[in-house]
Length: 432
Image (cartoon, rainbow, N blue to C red):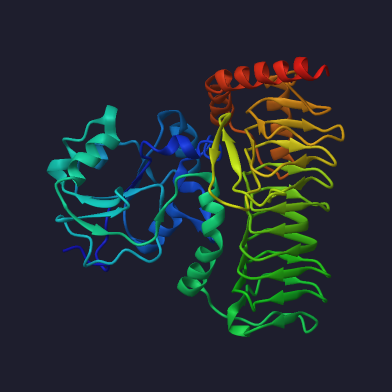
């Protein structure tokens, strides 16, 4: 039996259902998507802080991921086959820490028929098929005794948003350390033990932290300006600045964001600029997105029916009443951008509105001008703007990232062309 005190090797892998999450995971593995305070990869590393770690991901992500995580083994078959390893599905959202008595060579953890984790012996690992890794893992897991894993499997982008509120509560109970806000003018509503403020955070006077609906955690190097109201559950990650905002419950604001306006039940991954007014609800926003002043997302249909979301252009019933927008990396919106409920915006989209409600499907590397979809913003222009964007935060767009973006441009060409043809037909039918 494997015990917590003994170092464990783990490998987090992407399975065959990654495609449904590709809107948010084009530039990262699915286990780097955030729900609650952090990603699955960070949770597993907290479980096993002394363990060797590895990942198995889509091959075109390998150079960038190795660059960002040099201590992890990436798609390394030789390392994987050298010792027994705990394999963890990257779509798993655990409700609690994996217990040592569960992790034995006899068991496999499943949720609704989807593999969450399995401990694989060395001899079995050496037989895994590198070309069809996921299928090989499932064959191994089929030989195990099935036990019910905690939590859920993330299937679609809106699952991350729908689960975020509950996951924030779990994460606070698992990690939270209570500490009183630093400024006497800060008002805490609810139990002070449900509020954590880092000693290295800066909170101006006349800030309200309302923990009556859930816990609030504020990380180091966060600066919150006066006249901000934050409702729990909520987590604000390190280096973020909040400008006179109304942040409602179920919201995670990732590292180094700039945030103003109203936000509800949303995940802002990292390095996002939403400085100005505008409503963002039930949405997931990827890194390096800039939301112009008064950019607003609808998250509820007028007829109160379930929202359909166009993933890669094909509408999917979310079976959810409140769904906002899913916005890919490096996308930029101009002032007064208006997104309908269930909008899907890809990587490096350039949105230049003209007073109309925007298309609900904006594919990667496309642009919108005066409400019409087009592709008149070249890849080279997009790369130039992206380089300038990261430079504003004293960072650099690495050659590996540029190469990945070029690869994604080619991969998304069919989706983009179909969307452009569909938009042209609609303009001809309406006479615009």
